[in-house]
Structures are given as structure tokens and as C-alpha cells.
Length: 245
Ligand code: 1GP
Image (cartoon, rainbow, N blue to C red; front, top):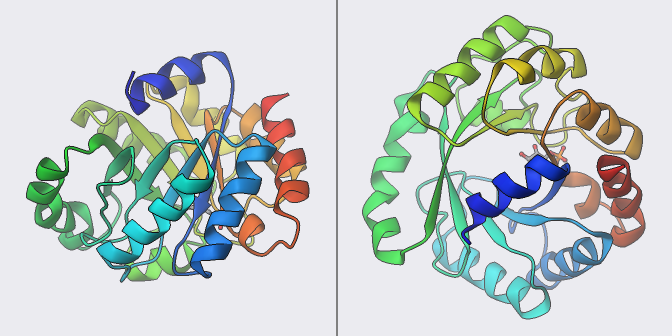
């Protein structure tokens, strides 16, 4: 079974938690120890990536190290065309749909496509939308940010992604955001789309994770909270329990 098939089956039964690990945020050793602790805490998948400007060799090293210590599947979450690795299980082939720059909508993807074909990586087409406050990805990706309560625009974009044939849609407030995407917006959009919805950015505790999950998100992504913690297991365990409960 490939990763997308697994996600589709799993998301029909339970909420999914994904741990984002950005290889640029810490040492290789720390990245792999975050992964090992997140796996113990019950995370379902690792997303590796985030920042722009990470080379293929940095991606390779990080994924190889993580794979030595864990069995959890690795999905690449690319910030640019160079962030690919044959050691991952799959890659989100993402289009930043509300960018104002074609570079992030289709050109990075075009630059990577022939390499991806050679790597034989599982490709998961995903629509990526950045909401206020947007943080670094909002600036770097030249995003026309969606308001955190603007459920009409969010739904229009999400449906456009679905009609393009994208398999997942991701609502992103930006890594380290002070506020996450509005739960009311999530609950307004989710019943009107047919593809699983990921929500991430600014989710830091069990209460907010539960709120987002119960508002209808299928997949909850956390990153910073583990990277900043000295006790990754103790930090993630209650968040994952809240999502799954
Ligand atoms: C990844 O934005 C998420 O796309 C992660 O956000 O770092 O705020 O958890 P945090």
C-alpha cells in the first residue's frame, strides 16, 4: 500500500498527526532524536522540509539518519525544487495556490519533475494555502494571504484544488504563527470538500490541537513545539492524545 492509500484509509477512521522536522532548524542528531521521540509519542508521519534553500544532500542525510532510528513513513514537504530525496517514502507535490508568483505555483515543480521521475518517489499532489499571519512562508512565497476567518475564499481555493485533482489540501498559518487558522473556518470548509484537510501553523498545545481536529481537520501538523522542546515525547504525547481522542 502506498502512503496516500494509507492516509486515505487511516483518515476515514481517526485523526492523523504529522510531525514537521525542518533539517535547517537543528543538527542532524537533534532532528533524528526529535523523530525518535515523536514516534514514541504516537505521531503518524514525518514531514521533512520547510525552509527554502535546503540542498538535496542535507535532505538525504537527514532522512537517512531518521530512517536509522524510526519506522515511521517520511513525506517530503518541499520549500523549493532542490528539496528532494530518494530516501523518502513520498513527496507532497505542492502548489502554493495563493502565491502571486508563478515560481511557487508551478515553476519549482517543473524544475523538479524529471528528477522525481528518476527517483521513483511516490508523488502526492497537494494544494497549499497560506493564511494570516503567514510568517516566513507568506513572505518568501509572495502570498496573497487569506484572512483567518475568510471561509468563503478558503472554500473556493480548496474546491479549485480538488477540481484540479489534488489529493490533499493544506491550510497553513505559517510555522511559529501566534494564531492558527480559525476553527470556525475549518468547520465551514470541511463539509464542502471531498479531500482530506491538513491544518498547521501555530498549534502548540493539546487544547488547540483538539479544537482544530474537532472542527474537522483530518490531519494536524505540528513543528516548532517539538523543535523547541527539551522533552519532545512529553510535549507531543498530550497533543497527539487530544487529536486522537
Ligand atoms: C508546518 O506550519 C506548520 O507547515 C508547522 O507550524 O511550526 O507552528 O507548528 P508550527
